Image 1 (spheres, rainbow, N blue to C red):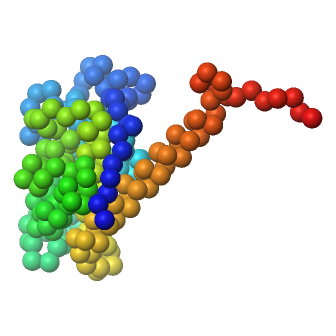
Image 2 (cartoon, rainbow, N blue to C red; image 1 turned 120 degrees about the vertical axis):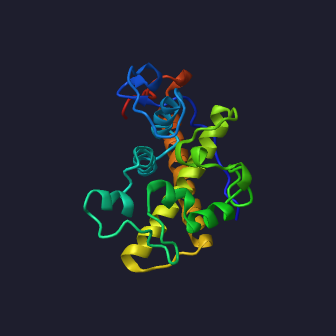
Length: 216
């Protein structure tokens, strides 16, 4: 079943009460042009993402998601090699989420037929998937939809990888995409509940809590 998207989360994210664009120093992101790191850190804190996906986006941008190559460089893994059967490449964050054959299969399976927000497979690239950076102009509404879908799929890749390492469970692409769809559905339900709660708490004219009548 195809997963629809919602577009009520728009606008830039804030950091410490200050818009990301106003921060004087922006940490660089390897491989990105000058100015693009500001976009990356704004995307990491995008309000469309629940906390779990914000954490994932933050670790991916910093390249500190605990993949084997990352852990091996810190003396915390015996091998840097990707755990996927037949792969054999160092498991960097980029490899895990984009370059590995398992990730390629998942991104090829995901698309507009599975997730209405995602463009065709040939339009996806590493900068868009990993950082939300695109050379094509995207409206705030469309980007919110796209960014949630991309991070839900990345979360499914990471979760399926951990199930392989921890429990030796092979998760097929279809099942991983079902996990991503469930993540998006949960976010949609949470957003709907938040909106309903805000509506109930608005008083006449849309301002503040509704006043109570006299107790009888």
